[in-house]
Each structure stands twice: as structure tokens, then as C-alpha cells.
Image 1 (cartoon, rainbow, N blue to C red):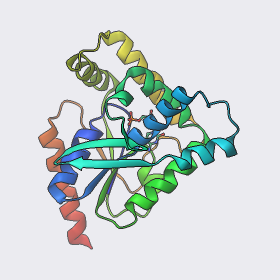
Image 2: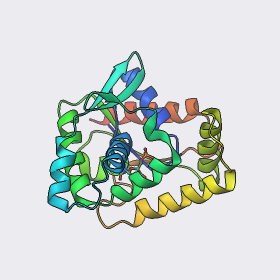
Image 3: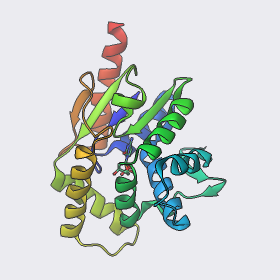
Image 4: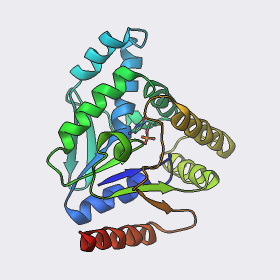
Length: 220
Ligand code: DC
């Protein structure tokens, strides 16, 4: 199953919950782009050519660890779950995700992780590029003001000092960057169910998704 859409549409929350209810593995592909962005910034190797950079990205051991619903992301054994969530890493990830070297290496890893089935992949291109043949695909969207409000609340709860207007600017800027890049831009797969989460609770959205999954199952 794949869930794509812009940032702040609620993808992670519903993807995690659906994976839990279905007993599937949850794969947060955005977290993988964030890890690469963070590791590259720390290493200072962003300027390397595409082939060298791809070899380096491919050499990273990125793993997800599910500790009873608390999913951690590790890179070469180091827990990066917290460090990848800053607004700075959000923008760096959006930038680095435009590079061929990064997309090719991560898509390869994602296909390996999901080849056995029983997975919920969440991201921007999981239904269009990573698994175009996925059984059920969703495209989750919401108005940008609402997505910025959610992101703002999340950051405030984590103790970050942020400004709503700035968060909105960042959300719009990141959408623009994710939707207009030349490689695998964010777009809805033709066969993905479009769900708008504006003004709706997590339960309502998950309820609609489960109904659609069941309906799809009955049709097959
Ligand atoms: O979902 P997120 O905010 O954690 O994703 C961070 C960035 O990673 C996002 O701005 C674009 C990139 N990304 C991508 O290019 N393809 C994906 N499948 C997932 C994320």
C-alpha cells in the first residue's frame, strides 16, 4: 500500500495507524531522504559528483526499528529519529531529494524493503515510481494553511521556537520544490484514491481509507 502527498497532510499519522491495524511494516521514505540530507551535511560531501555520491548513499545502512509502534530510524546503527525532524533538515531533504544519485539509491533500498509485500510506504513518489503496481494507493492532501497549522503545532509541542507565518512559507516553498523538480515530482498516481483531510479528524480519514481498502478487496 502506498500513501503519497504534500507535507503536513497527515500521511505519517494515518500510515502508522493503518500499518498497525493491518499488521504491516511502516516505511517512512521521507525519513530516508532526511537521513541522507543530515549525514551529507555532517560529512560535507554534497559537492561530490553524482556517481561518487550515489556510491556513498548506497553504502549507508538505513534501517527502521519498530519498538511496539514507536518506529525509529537508524543510519549505520545510529538512531537519527530526533535529529532529522528540524525545519533545517526538512529544507535540506527537499533539496537533496532532487538529485538523481539520491533518488536512485533510496528507491532501490525501498524496493528491497517492500518486495515481500505487507508494507505501507509513505512519501511523495511511492505510488508513482517506487511501487507503481501497488495494490492500493492513496494521495492524501489538505489546504496549505491547515497543513502549516499542523506542522506549527507539532513543532511547538516539541519545544521549538517557531512562527506560524514562517512555517506556512516553508510549507508552500517545500511543496513548490517537491512538485516542480524534474525527477519524480510529487503528483497523484492516476489510480490513487484522492483523500482531502482538511477539517477532518484522523479517525474519519482512516475510516474512509479502510472502507476503500475493503471495497477494493471485494472487487478483486
Ligand atoms: O515526508 P517528509 O517531509 O519527511 O519528506 C522530506 C523530503 O523528502 C520532502 O520534502 C521531499 C523528499 N521526499 C521525496 O522526494 N520522496 C519521497 N518519497 C519522500 C520524501
